[in-house]
Image (cartoon, rainbow, N blue to C red; front, top):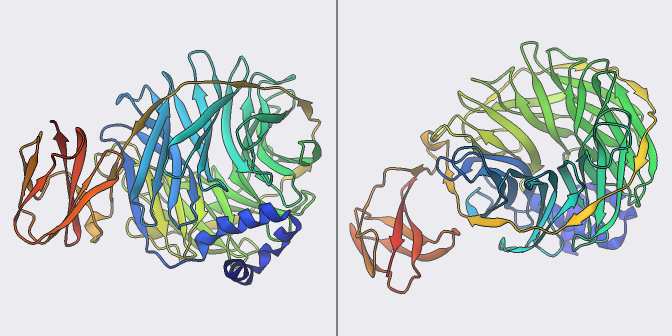
Length: 539
């Protein structure tokens, strides 16, 4: 009860959630505990497997204040076979465990959630040898796979977003090419129970293309689904509000005359909605980020653009902050050092910019998903190709409450404008369909973590070890030289610590006879630096 009271006092705007049923409200409060614990500092981390490419798409703050993200990682080393990538970290971005799942062709995780039973569910797209399907996997708190399922028809389905529902099940969305009535692809919504079994499905679309990017359950038990719909060769933001069984209550198309998109939508404290995306129709540059504040019935309260006259800027994710304002994350070409940089902008409740930051290096960074953190700061996942071996790597950054990063960050001069969309009520076709499919996927574990802020004095992972290890491979005892005044840790391929000690002398011998055969990592922490070396145990 103390935690519940604290959250309500700190975030009075959440009291409207009391209208929801008690079970969902309690689960909602548990998901907010990550923003009420002790402070943590900014950091930046990259995650991959050496030469393999990786990208982070979906990020979630866990109840213990850590993070879990999903995305895709190259299992072939040549960019030809991408697998679902799932990484669990502590509050400092250090890995607790990693997993990847895949079939012979490309698979990707788009969104991840911590479930009410302390496990996790990852949602995305899986490609069999013929077509793509929605992909849903449930893992326990240690990352062990409990079940995975796919959903779709004879053509392609592409997964984008998932939410856990008040009954403990899931609702997820994306686009379908299998169940369209007249168009090329439609919004596709699937509702399941907690075991992933289908309860109902819906498709919404017009005579052309309709692409869903986000779904949220609303305070009344219904759903809000956001994306884009093509009309006369241009994409327009398309928003659908349904009841608890997927029946349309209202729908809106926001006509900006050229291409405009919705990437994220949330329900706000008073029951309205905040939409984030990109606009080609309005703003200072060729493409600007925009925020659109809506009333509960979908009518606009205000719309503002954010960017610069020089290039393109996008908002991929938005959250409401404790002070009643908003923060969005995405990426910017206008303020990037080289290509694009991560782009984070904080506004007040009226959309007025309070601060705006770009984070990145000389090459390309993107930001795909942003979340509030336990100390009132922010975290975002995406990818970078600027640091380490310059290969595209999943990139997690943590900012403090003022948007300060541990390195590579700068304040930027965002220009704001207005976006006078014309609101239309479209003629939407509704359809149903969906086949639950069984599947078998290969599993892999482990990844390499790298700190791009090493030059700023933060702990770093170095490829050249400080110490000498022999013999390697090792049968029984391993000798380590050059580790005086270091903390020594041995980790297995899952990142589990199996041995730790303090080395006071320069030389150290460790008995490995009782360890199973396999690959291990010796980590030496000395001062402000971390050195690692791989060893192989063979008996």
